[in-house]
Image (cartoon, rainbow, N blue to C red):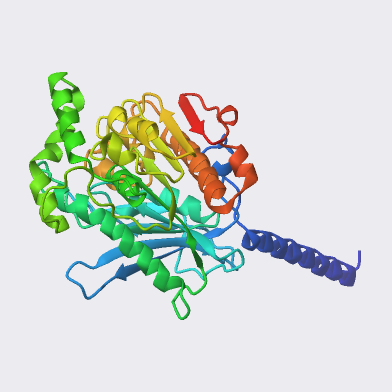
Amino acid sequence: MSRRSRLWALVALLIVMLLSFSFVVAQDAAGPEPLGERPDAPPYGLHGPYWVGTQDRVIDPDSAEPLEVTIWYPALNPEGLTEEIAYPATLKFEVPDGIVGIVYGHALRDAVLDMTGGPYPLVVFSPGFGAARSNYAHLTEHLASYGFVVIAPDHHEIFDPTWADIPKSTISRPQDVLKVIAFADELTAAGGSMEGLINMDLIAVSGHSYGGYTALAAAGARFDIQGFNARCDAARAASDPNAWLCDTLEPFEDEMLSLTGLASMPDGLWPAWADPRVDAIIPLAGDSYIFDQAGLAEITIPVMAMGGTLDTSTPYEWGADPTYEYISSDTKALVTFVNAEHMIFGSTCTDIPWAVEMGASFFCSDPVWDMQRTQDITHHLATAFLLDVLNGDAEAHAALAPDAVSFAGVIYQAEGY
């Protein structure tokens, strides 16, 4: 082969390589790879069709208690960047010196909005008591990848053994949800910084632990203090090991009443603190006991409750199970993780290394379950539920039929499917 021929062959090879590289980059930029936490992830447990962007904002920054929030949303990624991020996490409990709260996630900081599928439904996510909003990034990111705008507030509360912030948090958390919804109204309104991104006629609320309580309140559940106290009396008489929950609220009932501004203790159900636009909720190990049977019966919108049977923080019998039993919703589901503890809905120890560093690996692991497996199942069912009830997705609806849900170690019950 002549020198000129070899030169042209080399040029041709370079052109082919460049074209191949361009094709790969174009593929990467076109959409994310559909992967789950594990190779056996169910369909809606796979990464959705949208790249995920994230931004931090502050609601009422000049007020005495500004509310910090994180937003996750469908984003553009023309350069095909890897979704990698380290979220700061405010640790709202006593921690050893040198421990820094970081949550590793999969999103693009301040990415450009993807308006192609908008406006998108809104999901408000409420973290557990004393937990950082970023601790649930695995779920909020996942929902954003399927075309939801998710906003999570950082509630003002500190965890300590005396539960000193419980009365204030119990009253303020539902108000925080209302603030977030009003903030979303401003974001998506004409002239807003996310103009046209959010469909404010399609709203869901989710949350873990006391965030699950918050979701129930956002759906219209109402306190039944007399019913709650009667339940506590019966629990103590029966030596119910879960009666300790009563001690976290009963001593503070008068203080809670004062915080509401009510003149006297209601004879029956307390007022509701809910936006009527909330269409569905997903309480994860959500505390439901303060509402008791009558208060939970006020909920009529679609609900998917999840919980673990060995949960020692929000016991199944005081959280997920009565939620499903007592709500009045025609469409409802109960996802039971057999032998699971409380933190199966949080992040893995890989994503929150500070928990291991301070000797609190229980915060990011489960004695029985593989956390990546619970995340895949939770992602699948929560995503299908929201696609169904908010978007009217027929395939998602079919995926929630009782005979379509079969995971080892999971008991699934549903009505309306």
